[in-house]
Length: 436
Image (cartoon, rainbow, N blue to C red; front, side, top):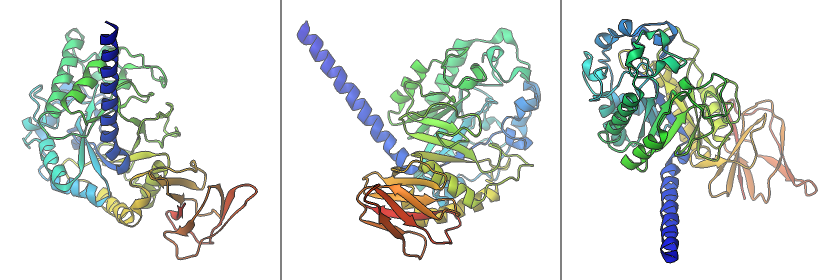
């Protein structure tokens, strides 16, 4: 019996070690990618007031329903969407397969509230899956846990969707969980390799100020859903925008509208884990298309946000909200093209890097190659006159994007390296390459 127990323990440890190595390899592409495209698109786009319009405008379920007969994105071009991401230097795409209004962008067999029952009538996700494979972009699906449309969702204990006018006697949590499992099975069975399942909506069933406790009003059945995902596609990464420390089974941690470690938006007060990291953000103020939102980030602002995010060892998932006809706004396309041109020149300082030895400072951040033989200092504050940094054994240090010769010397007493900077720095990001 003792021999059997030891053998079982050995097999158990070997299996778990193999599983960890498999997940580590699956996540390697993610940490190298550093930049992805987020897409919020659905019938809410028709109203031009963002993806939360059903809740913010107190639209009832019956009032919202006619959008299925209006939503008709005839100008949608999967190749154009993927090319926009690729031209922007993005390595992956996460698309809202189903947002909080419950509408499915694919030909699901679990609901009639779907894209193939609109005048458009085509499966958008299937088209995107084919194009992503063709153009070499990894594909992920955003999936809303909460639902403002379904009768069986437990909306009575939720924080949103109370004015949709549903029948509370039809709430059936087991039915709703079974529905989610069936939809996730479709997404991970019918669309080829899927790299990410990106959950959102957990917070609907938590206290408003909850940033530490995983207590919820419902059992989301993660202990069943997460293994189901990994069983269907072992290399698919699981992330959950719950604004909490990671839950067992999740493969990376999300920060909404904030660089990890900051909390300017008020949504990212959770502790930073040792998992791979990602921050998601918008190009203007909105996720879904908003007709009056013209507060677009400049290409320089997007690049600096990407650099700051990479300087914390995280990815940036930058959102676009296509117009109701299915076209990504030209303001997004133009800006991303400029960002892509910058990455064509300096992408080596972002892709395949980790957080550098210098933690984020007022002047900027550092990134380093995973082999640890190259460090990049990204000086984002143009008023910086000099740097004093503790870095060992420098072999060489040069500017990557300034013609000036970089002046530096090491103080043997303090161990600090002093960099003297020219009066005029790069308008976006002055980059110093240090080799050891």
